[in-house]
Image (cartoon, rainbow, N blue to C red):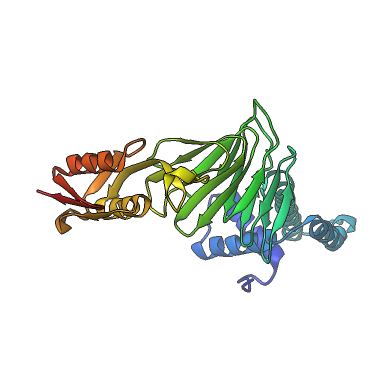
Length: 315
């Protein structure tokens, strides 16, 4: 923590208190010092640290409360009163930190060097993978059980037909009533893989996707993109990779749409270079490759020609 401009903390607190009751403006520098002090005071506090701090503060304040009251000049009494006021403010500040830490500040769990298992109050179990961070508000569990996740984690959610469990991640959320699933956030690529039960996945600008076991939701690393993939590949499909069951784009550049279609359908798509940045909004769910290419050509106002596995979009 940086050194405070006021070496005497009591005087510093009093000065701010005096300005508060007089209506004077607290300077930008003093506001900065307060912010630094608050961050420093709240950092890594746990119950033991709070208890030790409480004992030290009370010990230091004891002389103020056992000092006998004597008749003194008006100025001395006023200074004494100001000192007591500053002490009270300091106590209230420490009490506020204690109250915030105990009753309001969210619990944050991190997996710094390996996996970490977190048992939530509703009976749910979260396995955080390395580097993941889970934030749980003090109100959990409530009518709706909500947690925030950074990184990857596997959730085994305690079943409840009336209290949904929602995992809020980076740009998307997963809603369940009781199930086992994995949330992955590898850079810009987001995914939810379902092992048992049912989940609903919501992401900005795309329809809600409903998963059943052995299915996966992903955005393929592209914003405003949503796909549901079957992780069970039918032997009769002839495909070497999981089958895409639904695929939606909302205002996505053509070149990115083409990249995904080529990869998933194992085809090649040729198109005019000037159309590369044109934004595409389309749902290719349920259509054959030929039907999807016809739909894409219609959106672009182009014609489509096919030769083997090569589709050419042209004017």
